[in-house]
Amino acid sequence: MLWRLLLDAPTSLRRGLTLANLVGNIVIVVTGGAVRLTGSGLGCPTWPRCTEDSYTTTRAMGVHGVIEFGNRMLTFVLVLIAGAALLAAWRHARLRPLALAVVLGIPGQGVVGGFTVLSDLNPYVVGLHFLLSIAMVGGSYALWQRTLDPAPAAPATARLRPLTWAVVAAGAVALAVGVVVTGSGPHAGDEQARRTGLDPAMISQLHVDTVFLLLGLAVATWFAARAVAAPALTRRAAILLGVLLGQGAIGFVQYFTGLPEILVGAHMLGACLLWVAALGTVWATGFDAAPRGDGDAVTGSAPTVSSADSVPPLVTVR
Image (cartoon, rainbow, N blue to C red; front, side, top):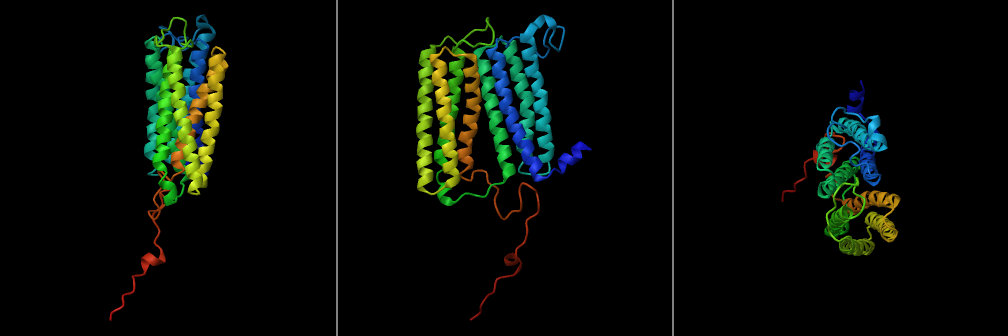
């Protein structure tokens, strides 16, 4: 049976499923953004039903109902992918807790999504929904990285870990402030949805300030990694800088062109990629690497005994 095949999945399949899980969590952020940007946030005006009388969209709901209902259905696709990844990870102690958390997080996110509809797209509930999605992306990334089973980093690289955590913290702040910017902007998801009432120009300036802080930390990480000859961290920092510059370019263009929907959607995708790139700098320092000498923590194999361990040390008596 399929579930037995997944329980005995080879390493390559396990890695592929966890990567698909990460991609799926990013895709559903983008499709959720498309729901809001097309004004379909209340295409299904209630939850868990689509209408008071139907769990599915009806012809009377029009295209907005199709878009919102379609996004809800993608949740079940994501459950299937995450469930397959959980089965493939089940016999591996390092993978099982994270895989289970990701699976349980999907219906939890569905409930929060339901509250966004029941609150008539309250901007703060919508913002919470997005931030929880970002947390799901982070958990999925951590799970995928564990299947790669990287070796512990060199001591010089590991000493840069606090700097990379500062990068992640700055990235989290930039994302959170970006959510507030969105909540004060024009794309509410429905014509009748209320906004935060905050000054968009002021919040946007605060968002830019947090991004410049993140940019400075990313540059510092790149130089520090070069100084200690840490190629993996140098490469991850360079990727982060590239994503940051691209995301910044999109942000400036969308702001000065009246926030066109296609650019706002691209900015949401960029936010997910930025989060993954920021987390990548932490993992490049050997964070969460499986300890060596305790067996293969990913495969669950028993520790091996070397010849040095099996032969007692010689003692010289004088």
